Length: 320
Ligand code: ARG
Image (cartoon, rainbow, N blue to C red; front, side, top):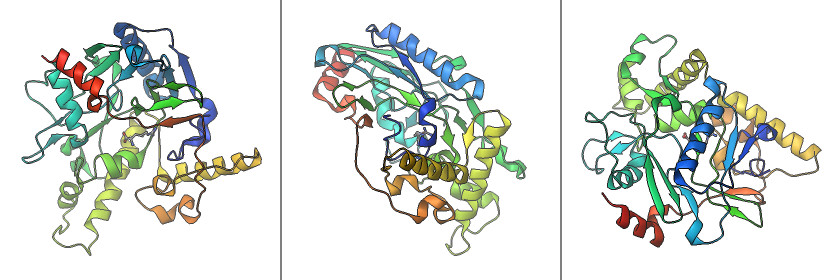
């Protein structure tokens, strides 16, 4: 139901298929780590992604709070201070610094796609855990018709597992309840690899396509976006990793809305998140509006743990 009520999610047609693993009895960071590895394995399912959530203890007081400090279970490190040439995912720069201060050492030769470690907190215990390669499935990005694309050496991981949101039932809150679905192609092809403030690959791709990137009206950005999104969908399909294109996801979302109404509910949705970042008006979700009536159960945002007083203290105590 929390998934069903998530106003930003276009994938909600599948809400009934969520696997929930009950780990509410776990307290030791080592045990939580094992449960997270089990989540990655079962949810990745060799590419046949299964929507899953692992539920840890509900919040009682600050002393026994459980949190995973990562934004997602799998993410790439971001290096640089923002002034020089960036390496990796700029979105994860702050977290990368946190991990380093806790003793994480990046590879001797850092790459744009270094998997970050897990930072797990249980009460006053704060521990760093490296993810084994076997826990992380990744897809090298190639294009069905442009052979040079492979040479860009782009890749992305298979499993989007959000780990920093609160699962709230309406009477209890669970600050640690990582969950995942499968990717919609545009999340990677338009935003993660395309955004200027992320991997910023549109100029690189447009130049390879032989386009003039000094002017706007030849639509080089649009051409690059389409090529990159084709490459993402095709590469995931080639590797047998479940992914959905934005047209299919949009018509599935329309079906979800219809189902909700048939069941006597009015779906809430945030238009600005539901409409895909490319070809918006070519999808049906663009051509209507939605109510915004937040409902429990739901997933809520929470402050980054390293910005809370307690988190800052734990960082200090555990600094390497
Ligand atoms: N947009 C985020 C990312 O690109 C993932 C958000 C959740 N996405 C999903 N398909 N369940 O990493």
